[in-house]
Length: 604
Image (tube, rainbow, N blue to C red; front, side, top):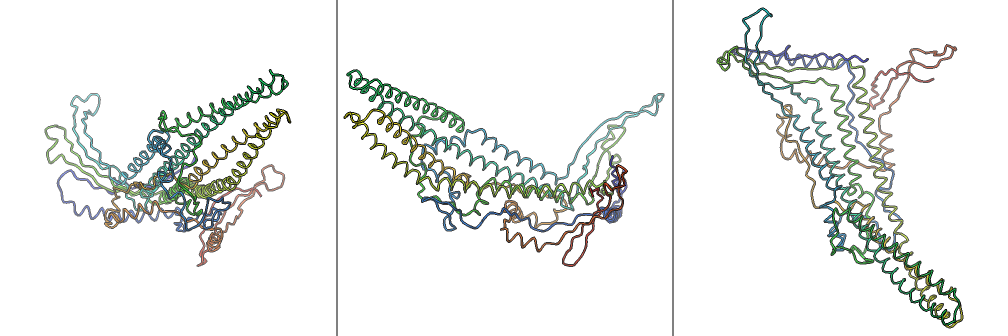
């Protein structure tokens, strides 16, 4: 069991009280001197703990991707350059040109439950920030009561007492920035929640657009299958008549019947796909789909874009909300380090009480019944068995984890964009080849049908040409759908779809700690605006070469283990473990050395 000793100097030590109206100026002066003395004593006691030095080095993200270079693998309609801004800079109302689709997106943003939950999460985060902000205000409690007591069980002259009190609870003076860091952490959590809402919105808009395109091309597949059924019914009719007339054997009629059934199966599959696409779209929209918003079959364009600009990878840091969310989480982890570091310092609080006390209710509000007390208290951590050090280490490791997560989010964004660009790179050529195949099979079918009717070739050639033509036409619809989907995905992975024209309402501190109240500049509107802009500012992302140069310029940290004892666990004459001290040396430019003793057991 760990043991923790905290020396506390409370109001009983330095507070002053009075039950009568007396001059108190001298008492105030004397108490102020005591507070200064106690503060100095607290610092000397706190020196028993090694307070970590503040790490003022900038947090650098090294995702190891070509941030300032262009993307690769482009089709004829896609570009990547610094001269043309990313598609993500466009509002979704401007990127999409299909009015029916825009109507469905508007319904989805209004009714979708996932998006509603994301909006409510923002309100919750805002309320949590307000709770943290209120911690800078003192808390005043009021109480009243009546008690009756006797000296012993034989005392028949019991007495009663009335009391009314108004007290200031322990109010912490934020000399070391602990409460300010907690407030900063809550603000970063709020900004992270707003980014999560934007990510949900982008995903919702993309899913609605993709479901809209899927429904459109399912309708087109149904039209193609129904037209094929009609054509093959005519072919079966002709084959049956030729068989009845004795011109052809039974085989062509059976082959025509099988070809017809295959087309009917395609109709059923298209109908099932339509139902699923409608269900998906209805779920995303959050209600029934109005008839006037059902897409036409095989929409050729849902956007007015002629050229699709991917911009530069660096623009992902600004437009991708998942990257911004990871960045805000990184800043929150940094604020948590400051909270852990501030815990090393003494905690200085104020407490006061003003009350009325009297044995008679009639005398309760007379001047002689007034009593009051006021005084600061200082709590100094003396020995905590390493708990503060462990908490500080945990905070530092958590920031390293969030930094790795931030770098990974940048890498993920870059890979997703590259994947979409790779898909688009050959889509145009695939479509051109598929259309050439369609022309080829149309001519093949016409020739095979003419040869069959002339009795030169059998009906199997006609059926093969029909199947090949139908399969090619289905493939064209699939590729046209992929082309539309790739446009939607490119806009999504670049970060397009958030409300660019609606600024984020960033909460600013409404309350200041008493330590900061005297600083008028910190309470000005300019200071509040500066704090809000700094909170939403971006972290620095560097290239691998720049990161290497910065790392080489950093101080050198060296750990040395000095064993103080060896342990032979199984008594075989061999050392199984060693107990000793690790000395961590940080070599600065001034060749100063900071030593932190840590006891460890290590394997030899």
